[in-house]
Length: 139
Image (cartoon, rainbow, N blue to C red; front, side):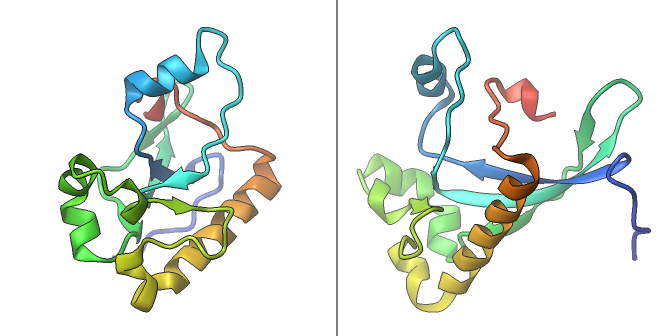
C-alpha cells in the first residue's frame, strides 16, 4: 500500500542510531547538566516514521527500516561480538569516510556513504542532532 505524503507537522522521519554505550554509561558521561553530546560512532542505524500525537510529540511506528549494518552477522550477533571485545568490528564513525565495519566493507560501503549524506543533510537542517537522554525520550 502507498502512503499519502504528509506534511512535517504530521509525520517525520526519525533516524535512530545505536552505539556501544549503554544507557547508564551515557548518563554518567553527560552528568546532571545535560550538555551537548555529539555521538559519532554507531553500531547500527535504522529509520522509522513518527506521526504527530494529540499531545506534544510524535509516536514512532513499530516497523523500522535498517540502513546499516547490512551483514547478517553484524545485525544478529553484535552482542556476542561486543562480549568478545570486538567493538572495532562493529563501529562506524559517521564523520570518517573510510570507517566501515570490516564485514560490511566489501559489499555494503555505499550504504555507509548514504548514511553520511543523510546525517549531513539532517545536520544542515537541524544544526545538531537531538540526543535522547532516557529511553522514554525516543517516543
